[in-house]
Length: 422
Image (cartoon, one colour):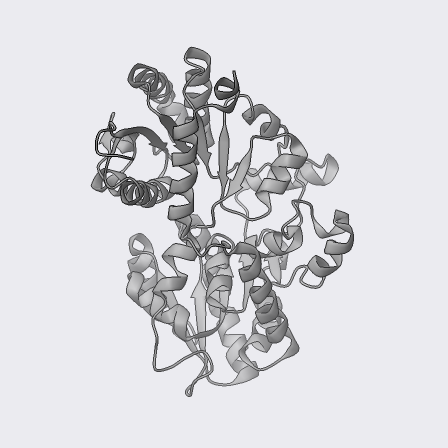
């Protein structure tokens, strides 16, 4: 971009805190790649505002959790959707970027496409069409010009399902965790008792469902392997509650707070016992073998029962690294992947996961204890993590935010493909 060109006009919309963090990193990369000649308007939180976003309204207006809260505030949410779409059409940006939170962002995008088809639309983070509601992929193609995927198999999935053109830009964990892991005096193979990470989740409901069982599991693991050092990185809003609840554990964990302490714990850990979630991918990227547990809420438990009768969910594991390893790079699971499937099969279900009635101290201890020693179980997970790194890394060594910014700039400069060709 030359000095005589007008600044790039980017309208960017996030609908939840995780999207705000993604949006902030994307905005920083866009500023770097345009020498600062870019202006931002849209919807986002503190991270995006710190990068120069001029928000249409307070982020808290749309970051609503829970069915009851959504119902109570539905009129306001619908009004904000329409307000946002109208603002996009009025400003006629070079590109509209929507980030995750499809219940909000996709409704905005559909309205924008109807009102002004000339505005190119980029979606950052794919809905989980590979798990359920696969028809969303083809529906998105009508109003999304480019999808930026954070999982390496998603371009193949969308090609198979008739979704929008999809570019893999890398998962943010490759940028936010791996480069920041500290060098510690005590590594995962160092002296002293092995560090066992305890990760009961970042939501109150997860902690309530899993923490007591995790405490019993830690005691059983120590009975089997000897002295261990349990460390529990706690999210700030649950740390006091967790401190109180672990006080009477037979083997009390060291509860640590803050990102720096979490990174240090990850760097030192020998193994982990974790709730299902993004943290499983963080552990895999950090090279920490794990066992994973999850208890469902009432609605999810009901849907699981229904799914056994009339299947509508297409996957059998809740662990994200397992899903990535099973799909490989081709966009189809190992069972359908032919020759490549044999490579994928070697790492199938590498990380043991336990759901509902299988979440017991004995079963979890059986899975975790071997990971603390030099065993076949540990070596298999470490080999799977190497395969995962190969699948997830970007060939040119770019950070995910840099790859995403390049993609957004490419779409902004060429416009909508169908209109550019006419």
